[in-house]
Length: 218
Ligand SMILES: Cc1cc2nc3c(=O)[nH]c(=O)nc-3n(C[C@H](O)[C@H](O)[C@H](O)COP(=O)(O)O)c2cc1C
Image (cartoon, rainbow, N blue to C red; front, side, top):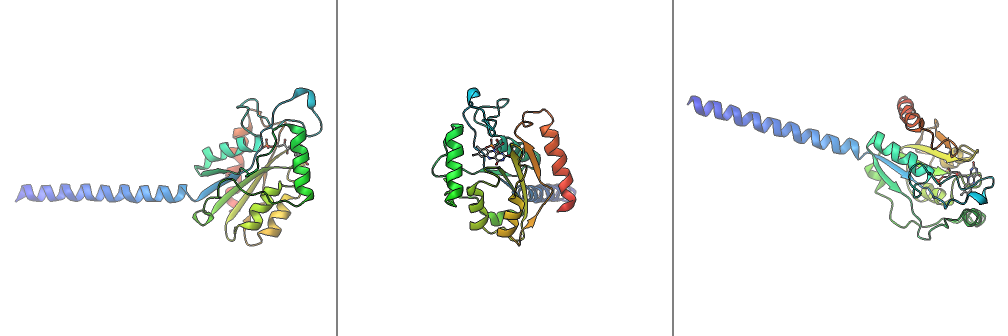
């Protein structure tokens, strides 16, 4: 009789602890998957003899030649937030040579192009916080980011832009996003890092500080 009592108590403890663990796991999954980081970034081939106003500084030499500046910030954010990371790639790839890239981006802007995505965007309904990072191209956001905000619904989502740039900081991008997604909760305390500072050892701490600071805004 006593043995049976002890055994059923033991069994109950195991069942309880299993239930708690499952609840924890479910909770972890839900919080982790609620944050998405979307980034567009275009690493360039470094050509030291071809420098000009917007020269090839998008190549982050400290990391790898494949990592663009915005992508680097996105990776830091991913580590910090444990969110999902989606990097935008277009069906037609961009040139990696600086001058050709400048011309391609200029043409896209003139024609108001909306480049298509190589892989579909994740299902946005799974997320409530969405970071969106992009470089400034010709004093505004790249056309693919215009497309992102025109073709998807960010209503009621917390949208947190971040940029890298060569001096224009955010340019007009906050206004352009707000115009296209008036129902999004747009965070206006934007992280904007100059490509000249991107290799600075302080950048990870800067990202960390920024994430902490925007919490009360949300
Ligand atoms: C096509 C093109 C246009 C650019 N136009 C601007 C600009 O108008 N203002 C600015 O501050 N930086 C400009 N830049 C510099 C980029 O914003 C900067 O190098 C950025 O960090 C690149 O990010 P990525 O490596 O993630 O692509 C331009 C760069 C390119 C390639």
